[in-house]
View 1 (spheres, rainbow, N blue to C red):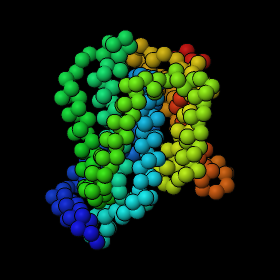
View 2 (cartoon, rainbow, N blue to C red):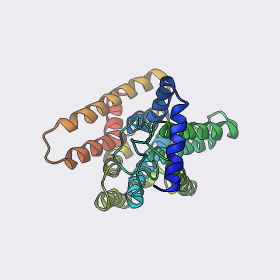
View 3 (cartoon, rainbow, N blue to C red):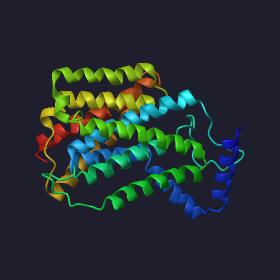
Length: 299
């Protein structure tokens, strides 16, 4: 056991000894904010009812982050906390470093804070201005709380979180640099030549597809196909009425639920095929299928 791991076990033990069942519940809530089930709610909410460009960019950024995180875990090959030394409250199978929850939290909330401050959410610049300290502070606090939850639940060491935040910061900085240069505009992905970008998630599947890498690359491929086939012409405008947005979200989430629970029940051979198909269809539904249905239904 390394010195970093020994310190990590001590810190986790101290946090858990000072905790309570109620605090355990709070930690589980913040940990859920980094689970894929939460992102299955957040991304449709943004893309279908708040802002198409912000939602699309965040979906691509999050899926890329998830794949990179899985690949980094495999390269690092470092363990998670020992269940004989601390109380491991959530079972995880992949390696520990870098923390996916920490990395993805910094990417997601950092990007949303940047988009909010750049007034990307407003149609025609209509978003009220907000204090940068408040926005960045909120994103930072939420990111730290999600990291704390992983320590408290005994599934990560402190150095796992630090590595995750570093990887997330580098990825976010690169993505924002591309966006500020106008290289990530949705219109660029509707041209025939841009469809070559679909080769990227295919390459990702070939290079590495263990753990969260497989669903991330599959969903990214599905999202690209959905955007290429349907999203470019079928994506309806964001509804101005709150009720219309609620109906749209409910209808779309019904489709998400059908794919999430239905595809694994199909009699497909092997373990990979159902997972690939599930996330491939989810990605396509997010950017193409659901928006096409919204337009046909007039919502």
